[in-house]
Length: 390
Image (cartoon, rainbow, N blue to C red):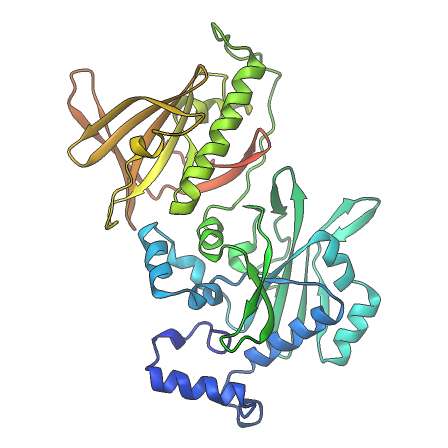
């Protein structure tokens, strides 16, 4: 995966793959040129970071995907992983680093040492003012036609965030999947151990499958309220109580769906209120979300049974039609949560609902693209603002 990140290494015949791996471990490849120089370029960069006791995290989607098992890849495609995130510029790899460690790699001593290894260091045009000094939002190390771009993650509320890259299209600072402002659920750097037990020096996101699914929905949209809104008045709950119950709902939905690689997002009047004035209770006193279910799965997620024994979210209404789940209503200590079930394949999304006479209506959402935003300090998905059809 590190030597042929965009070539079908994983599809090579087993004997050919074994021969290639033996040549790597024996050290023959550096002289013979059997392996792409990309491998040694990454290794030298990782050794540089290790010297300064920092741990950049490999983010390049094509390489991470290659490292997964066949079952993990199948689960990703079942959950509609977009193949476009697996395509990146050739001879380029992206790493991530936490803001506090990025300061070390951009110091003059680090830059000078990188030069002795043949690296050319470049700063991006983006900087943020943090704790009394300006911090680079990204930077790169290049050698001949090979480039490592390092994306800097900043801790923000309960998640990691990085601003968009400010470079033009001809710049080396253009890993396409990370070019815009993005946000990710907190993750840790996990050492990548080789099969023989040796340390590779590489670090990966703690949950690679979950990280890859986040990449395609990670574009971050800030929400700036146009005015101070008192919102609607609930008959029994104060505004503070509504927000506390909404926070519990968001946390519980993540807890239930994350192991299944499931996703949910703001929907209906909740989405409308958020888009208009950053207030989930501006147009409704209920909490409306959508949950995506793959239609190609070998087993079906029954949402109703998943919440039967939940401590905070209690099912109160459930609507099905044959094998299709339509809608689930939960109660969180007086707050009603309405879940619209969305079905998805690789081409489109849709859901079913009943009209006033009880007949089914199919709503199609072609090319529905999700983004991320911060709701009550939590990272939550929503349809991107340019989704005019909604």
